[in-house]
Image (cartoon, rainbow, N blue to C red; front, side):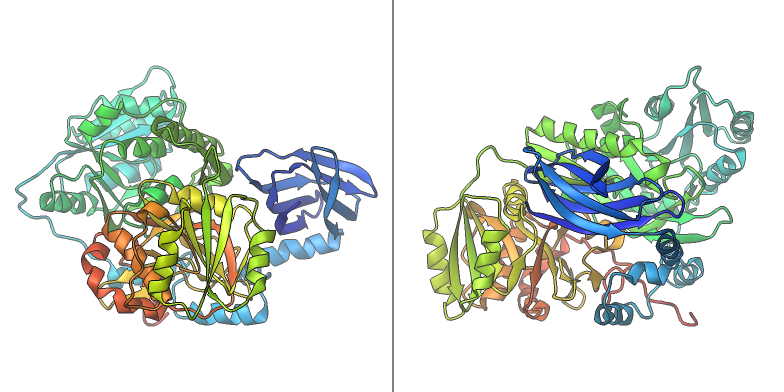
Length: 638
């Protein structure tokens, strides 16, 4: 039985709890925890993915016990010992306080060499949780357009459901809208039968203060989707802006939106970057987003706030759906992608989430745990409508992994390149592959690109997977996942997360700077790290994916360019597909260890000829540093 345990620790001083994270083949039916040969807990595994099941359990344990054994049990009740672990109160106490120290918590799994490499890389970059550092960066770098005498002045209707929000925060929210530099707007509010008199009084006060504040008081509580639809009935504007009732809008937000619409009035859907603001008004934790990428959206609602959408489209799809509360925006956005592709991203912080108890800005897991299930159902509905067979794995919070399914295994050809009699890679493939319908061809370093093209053209398989011979497979369902993604009509090449021999992520997806033709990817991170806003947690669209393992559908394949080495030719293939309108996707659920040298610099040889197609797919936010991916540089004096 194949499995991997990423975390198996016991915490809790008085009430011990086992944290168990990893994956196991679907042969396993249950997880059994024993102490002194006595079963103290048993969990039935909820199988989601086709070949393996991921899990993240917090399992309460009996008090007074010091030694535990964890087993996987199959359908025949055969038990396989996974881990033995001992604990006592003192160890759990140390663990508790160790975990509270950020540095130790972040690096306690890492060896010395890895820690040093990470520490050096992130030197002189901002800690996103540090409000003072971030505020200094904002003062230096953020800029906004001035209000102009626009030829197009659309009315923007801010739609807001309200329920029992403290009047103080509701007032902050409404003031942030009323103080906008662009003033052609209205605020359409539906109070969802609030019982807090402070909320009701605040609404009446603002209605009397400004006629653009329109409120419908619902006679009965209907939850957020019904309330938002009630607010939509008050709308008279051309565009609808979505906002929560305790957050804050940057005063230039509407003007930035209208500036974009004057440059391109055909845009249907605009979204912006955002950050968080605490009770004292301190800002931190910015989310600098990618331009629109459909595969990234499938992993969760990265769009979020601030969103401005053409009213006629919301009317067309029927507004917000009941039964998807907690993920009602995510469900709306998925349905909007079915009726428009005119989606634009403004890479500026124009929205501030207020961090108050119970808000998802503080932490989504405990605050709104129903949201994850609602988002999963929204995705299932979306793919069901498209008649695409999928499994949706909601593995953490409101993050999702879409696994594409096939009724019958297609034929796959694995092309092992840079081969110099490395039997290890061949054994790794055989050992760590549950997919059966595959063949292997080895391509040694002496073969020319012309010879390789001839070999590929003679292959009758449906899919091609290129893998560097200096690699080791880690994920047992790697072929299923890669082929599932490569089978989608809009996807060109599929890549994976590549880890080095010390557990450091060496590559995943690549971004391209047209300014100086530079290539950059995630900075050095431990393989367990989620990456910036989940970049190493869920599939994301990139300009290029790492070529150490990459899959492509045979009928999308074109000849490899004979002008370059094989390594560069594989990247050239990706850019050809990008130019033809395909997406290149990195799927972190597939992981390999690679012992070869990086070849990022070689890619720069081919960038200039693909300038136009690269310019159309900007998946890297321009606020980030070019030298250090997903980082902001510290401002002098920090």
